[in-house]
Image 1 (tube, rainbow over the protein chains, first blue to last red):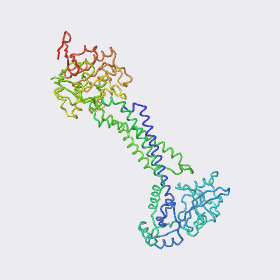
Image 2 (image 1 turned 45 degrees about the horizontal axis):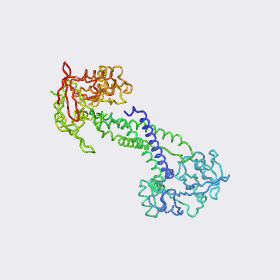
Image 3 (image 1 turned 120 degrees about the vertical axis):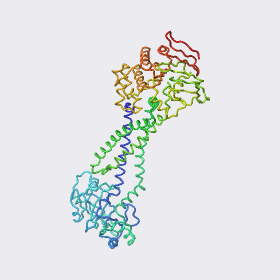
Image 4 (image 1 turned 180 degrees about the vertical axis):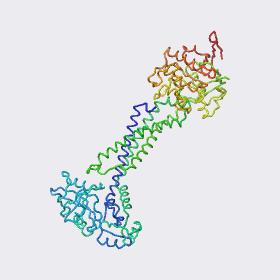
Length: 374
Length: 237
């Protein structure tokens, strides 16, 4: 019956497509943003534990510690190795005078733990050269918008000279600042913070010991906070959800998708049931029960929901397929996780059935005796 | 066995202005093998009466027996089964499903009763061919004339071989010729020794097709005429 009414069928399909597009695209961006807040943690896969000051709540808001901290952590039983990691912000100035605030990451001079994993130009060992820095590709584009990726460019970071010796590929970060890697000894000078040159101590556990057990031991012996990588990532994401307002903003947009979906589906099914009330009453008079009428309508709702979902998710996928390969821009690194496909599909089905039920309640209550009324 | 027999049927409706008695002690009979017409002015209670026969209305007093079953005391769930198996409907506005073809519309009661489309459609085709719609089986209602749509509705009303056929103003929306054709087909196909047919009508042009004419006024049966060789003979109620 519904499929015969092409205008309503089209309105339903378009409404569900739009709701699917809105829900899936916004969920994917939200999910990608949350992941980006803990991106730098996942880049350092050699370390199982991150040790920090107890006041640190999130990865980006770190607090520096003294060099001695590393030795204290190394002395804890169960620690196989511990290396310092430094991060801060500084001001980068190009030869042409262009200024950019950058995130400076200082990796251990000797072990090179936490060095970038995916180099596009140069190699990590080039950091051993004087004044050497590695810039992430999207950061390079932000600093030198008119130039192709290349090495050998001289810059000034803080009050130190730097030479770009490599370009690496990194996922997008929460702050969106260009990231430059340097040996820690150089990085602390670039950030002008020589007294407390350690922000985190990266730890690898010994043998078969559980990282959680080693964390507790480190905390007991040093009064510092020790977290496994996943614990720290969860804490960072939790902090973002709680304090950044991003969950509310995306939540409102996703809610809008739900409201639009329910409203369009509900309104269309309501109009459909009003216009076909006599036909439904006839079916009930003949002997069709409400359960079968609901099943019949639900089948049609599921059909339009499937078509609308496929169109909407196709558009969302197309959006990410087109925008993701770009190295720069606010959508860099955004992607749709498989669970978003399934989650949105389930959500759309529920939204369609809620809207459908709200719209056709009248059919269930219609008195079949109206068939004999003019 | 009698077809429809009702005795002293009364029906009240609650309205904002207070209860209104629509049927005031109706006695009525419709015999199997006969075409009974129920006639009378608007508001006299015809529609209420056939709604009671159909099991679409409840709460009347008196007795209403259809082929020996007292449907006035039947539980609601049984009424659905009763309608599905025993009652055929034909309406003034046809009430066909816009998205279904003529043959699919005709097959609806069989589908509702649980038969498959493969079983139901050939039966619908045979009936529609007898109704002269053999060339219009796949057409949608919107592609058929009023008379053709009413013939599809007749097929839908008869396909499950109901024992009671209830028709509400079947010719009201048709011109004179189409109305006569529809009544003629209805008479040929609906009248059966095992079936009682009750037609509510305002249209005096079709009275000649009736075996019995029951006149109602103000909630009461006022006159019953039965057809004999010499024409209709009148019995005052």
